[in-house]
Length: 470
Image (cartoon, rainbow, N blue to C red; front, side, top):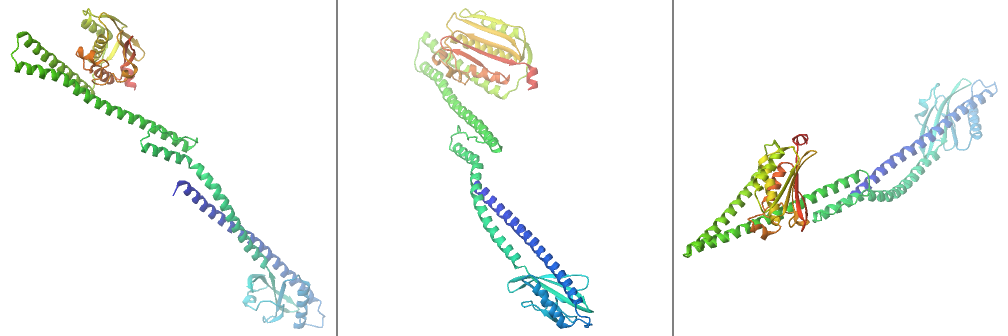
């Protein structure tokens, strides 16, 4: 059953119970009030008749010492004739034998035995599908004790109750029908966000992670929709990251296989040449040199891969190091190189990190800048103290990198210019190692590059105090 149908049926059931209970109590309340009013009137008429009978008895000639039965009957007839239509009387003597009775009065019951001098009694009786209020009282007249009973027709009160229930049932049905139509519209409106969320979940189950549910309200359902959309965004991002990770792994395996194939082909070829033919000294030396060079290349690549794996599983022991040590190290490594012009400028400061690893990062960045530049080009190395840490930058004026390749340049084995990198014994692992080292330092590479104009690689090593606060 749909949620909107549950709301509709639940509301109809509650409305039916509420209307039925309220109608029952309301109609019965009106009935009880009307019946109480009729009973009061009947008792009042009984008192009036009692007084009228006693007054009439006082007017009996004094020659009668005792009220005769004939006189009682005569007074009863006058009282009945002088009353309103529909009122019936019965007068009984001391022995409860009937002395006067109106036509249609009910048969005698034990009702008289309950009458005493101090109280007036009544009861509701049903006779031939008619309802009556029967009252009883005691009369003292000329040394006689008589019993006066009256019957007042209250059938109209009961008919009004029956009619009230009938009308209320019809009104209840009408209200339920109109309320059902109204509640159906309200239920559909209230559950629209649920249907939109259901559609969104179906889309996501089909693989459309970019679909978002429409937010049409600002209540709890609207908040739920916003939370769902945020969750969908996080899921889409995670799925994209997983897809990128799978693609990167596939690219890594393909690139690694390719990088192994090239030097191994050379090694196997020249080794086969050495064992299958007798070569002159020069050819023999060149062949052995090719084998040695490619072997060293494989060794360097394996060491780089090992470094990357170790970096992912290790923790750092960071200390404070003067910034000048890093730039002095670069001067020692590249100060005597005549192919490139290094411009090193820095501000004094303290760097919180693993000094040897950060030197390796700077060395890789400068080495890449040299490989991307023509001989004699200028390479700028900068250091500056900034809020929250120390900033390093290496800038070249070489070939540059396009925006799409900047996003993948830190992947293992990825090389922008493969022929140029291999010609200089590159394997595309340097920047991957740099990215891993900087990640351990809670930092990352910032790359700014314009094809044909050069590139700038920079990173900020945060201070120890800020990391502790984080």
